[in-house]
Image 1: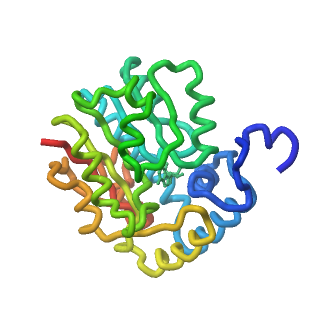
Image 2: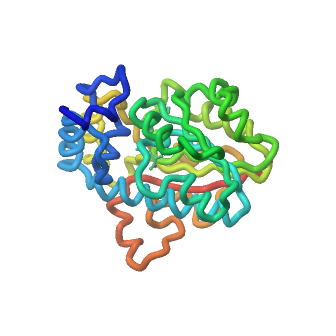
Image 3: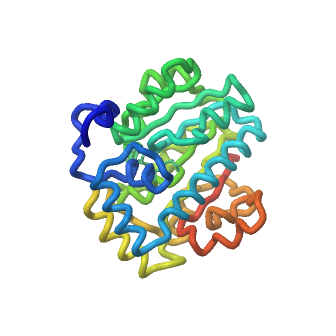
Length: 268
Ligand SMILES: C[S@@+](CC[C@H](N)C(=O)[O-])C[C@H]1O[C@@H](n2cnc3c(N)ncnc32)[C@H](O)[C@@H]1O
């Protein structure tokens, strides 16, 4: 990487090791990725329709944020928020409600640096560099304390991220810690990689991601259902991303290219 392109690279980033954030950025047509990320993404495309997976996941995120806003949610905690692209959570939310508050969390410095840049003049949104596996660190972060009120309903987003948390780190216990911190009427929106649709492709994708800083751990429908605990899933339940409240014709046809289950649940 030479010339002006290096200006967006925060110090301390290892450009040799691909990251999920930058691979996703590349798949979505963004420009904040390195050659190693692009090689990994191209290898992924050989085994899974990764570009469609990324696009369909992003479209699900957009529908979810608009749904939550329509349900009266005015504050969001977005875990594994990624590199800003079109239709970021605060843009979608603040378009409808300029007072909506958003905290983005990611453990990848390129993602957080760009989120910070984008949010420079936005008093109602912030980005923090943190690991979602440490909920207490996130709850006590000054931006979280300043912007989010856990005594009121909140939209907790875990979109396209829990497949990066290994079973060994108990993502179910982690999800429970977040759920417990929320007020009644809060929502958990979650999407994640699954085996169920294309097991062979997913197995190959696991090998591809082993060469990145973010190995993947796809899960079954039942395993992902457990992340919602005693929250009530809203219709249509946990389904492939394009089947979650589709808005355009033919969206359902994409279900076989999704490979991510998605759902939204409310805390009773
Ligand atoms: C596939 S992107 C999804 C971005 C966005 N949520 C979306 O759905 O469009 C996954 C993001 O999760 C981040 N991530 C992975 N593991 C994480 C962790 N333990 N804590 C915080 N972020 C994490 C990655 O850095 C990446 O930016």
